[in-house]
Length: 75
Image (cartoon, rainbow, N blue to C red; front, side, top):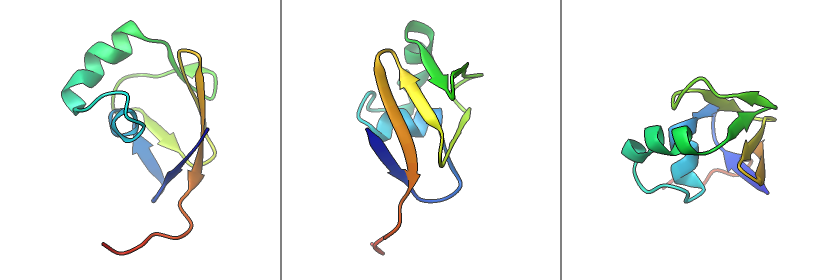
């Protein structure tokens, strides 16, 4: 599944909220202790690990490819 981000990177905690896995950043610490999360086939260092455009993220059996948001609409 492709996930679009705007900017150079997104932190793991922000990513988990963006894809709807957790609803608050406070739940990140528990989630990463109880689930396998890899960025480009390497274990993350913590909830502030950076996920960059082009990275492949594995969360348990789900795979996400990070792509740049091409058409950001001003809100």
